[in-house]
Image (tube, rainbow, N blue to C red; front, side):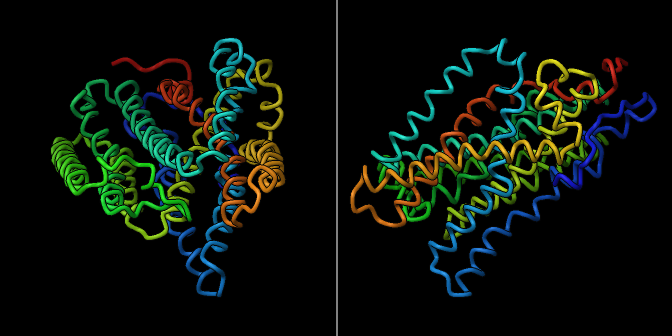
Length: 384
């Protein structure tokens, strides 16, 4: 990703080009990092199947894929959040309680990892799903904001339009997930999450309800998009992004190995996040908003997205140290621990301690829809 977006400095555009500026940055960048990077989704699952085909034990192949995705893209995406929060002096001064309260999260993660790993993974799965959906709605809203503020002030971005977009996004994961829950087959790796899901939801009605809501949402989305197309106001960048997202997120939960299947979605999600985060930092650097408030980030940003990716990757050392520590003490805390559970406790503790803080901070960051405004028209929106 870094090599393909080596320079993320923003370039102000003129009035004459506003009609072609529905893209968040430009068509090539949006398609490469936001939408068409969807082609990466099947790769983790295919690599897992290849490993099994070559003779690896399924759990070994699964853990190898998990580890690679975590180091290659998932981990840097997780740590890149702190480039905008913990490493930014202005953010620390403005939101001290947000950062201080984040310290509670590792305590919860470590406790649950040893006391009830299935409960930890259940919370993780649903929070991860919420986080992914929140990022998707955030990107969708960035498209809406740019259209309504900079391109077409009298656009079709209405409350009803937003509700329909959000409806299809927020329900696409759940039909097959609800089906597996109703069948008591909701496993993540070797961990049976159905064991901690209330029996009330482990029934056919839950699958039927979620499927009905999703079908209704898809129908509304198709009708809305058709009407917008006929009226000549369809936001193509947003529609392409939402359509691909819904299709992929609907299919993923149907696969047998959910652990590895969701790594595909995680890869796409992480690439989107890195691209947007580095773009935002590049915009701030272009307007000299990093020099004094985030000097370390500013130093690495001088090398473009490669530098920012390197800094995010270096920060993974903290997660690796946590993994090694927990992996060492796990047999002491839990004598006779099973090999798979031994690895899972250390892996999920090391990852989730930082990942949940990343989720926590992003729920705040994902409320700022004006974050790209400086790149849109230099100084201020064009009012017509």
